[in-house]
Length: 164
Image (cartoon, rainbow, N blue to C red; front, side, top):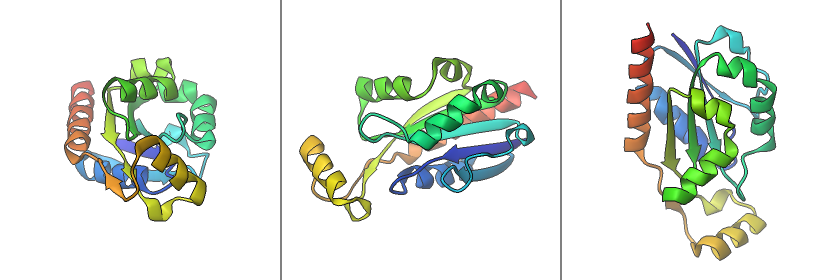
């Protein structure tokens, strides 16, 4: 089973989550930052996991374009979807539903909300000001949840084994 994890990461959290996830997945797993290659050879893979991060309520334009351009082929794969965000509960679910098309959400073997991070040293001045105003945080905060990442991998692995 060849699995591709694709993501765009502005400050490194989604990349960190993708690498953590890859440690728990079965099969041949490759990780691709869409900032480095926005046109992967999707037919080579049995499964595709899309990881996104939210900034100002949206995922990156590059990731949105990747999803829209490849929606048909993605829908034919064993899909997993995860979102890194600092919102929790219903707000996080709403963000997830807003950024991933219903067609992929309905097709996904599993989906996850992995939490997020504020890493001030990687933010520009404007980002720092927005985060301070919206969240009240002034120092680095990590709410990335390894248990949720492990559970996502467990569910994905189980679903793939059921399909074989």
